[in-house]
Amino acid sequence: MMYAGCVLITPRTEFVKLWPAIDERHDVPCAVDFSDLDEKVDQVLSHWDDYAAIRRVNRARLLAARNPDCLADLLARIFRRCVERMG
Image 1: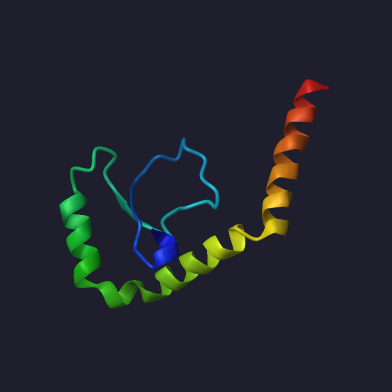
Image 2: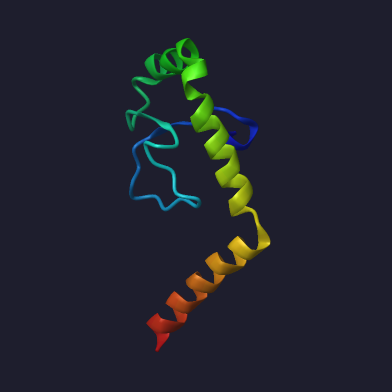
């Protein structure tokens, strides 16, 4: 969705590892149980133009994350960590 220029509304779940990382600079946080989702959607829709920069940055981040060199670096780091744990 971020790839398409949408504003991401997500619950605060820091225990979930995301790639690329997503935090308050990249999304609009909502309650873990989505109890304030209507409020957050209204906030985004009523201030849509204010989110233009975030939408552009998020799309650029996703495009960069799909770069083959970037993916290779990510997988290499994961494999190194696994090997280090085994040794």
